[in-house]
Image 1 (cartoon, helix red, strand yellow):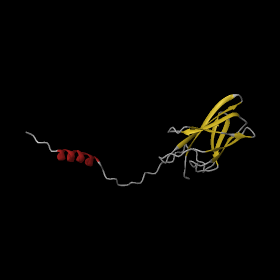
Image 2 (cartoon, helix red, strand yellow; image 1 turned 30 degrees about the vertical axis):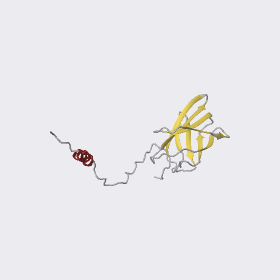
Image 3 (cartoon, one colour; image 1 turned 180 degrees about the vertical axis):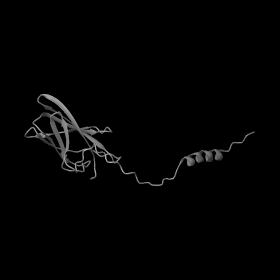
Image 4 (cartoon, one colour; image 1 turned 120 degrees about the vertical axis):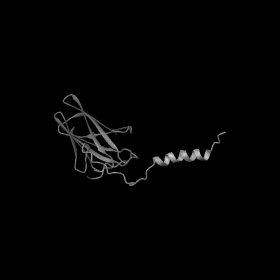
Length: 151
């Protein structure tokens, strides 16, 4: 009869996992490449053209800090109406955050924004803006990195 050896089986099973593991040489994460498609508020306002209208988004706090109030300004090259803005995660669902805009001249809109942080350390947010110009509804968006460092 054949005798079973439970310790030998456990040892072989453990050995399989040890063979597959490689020692880590460097535990520091690789630096992230700079994504030039994102707004860089350190350089100033982020501009987009929607047909014949230029739209600019600027943050008073260039770092775009999470979980802290950010004063923002949305500027249009001509008077517009029905301006609405919301912010949401570009690559990850983090909910939709409405932004309450105020204006006195239909060209410059101001608001304060607060959004949450992401545990990954790399969170791209998208500011969606809709507006009417000469009776036509238009849309534009601005992507930006939360807690961005100057580059």
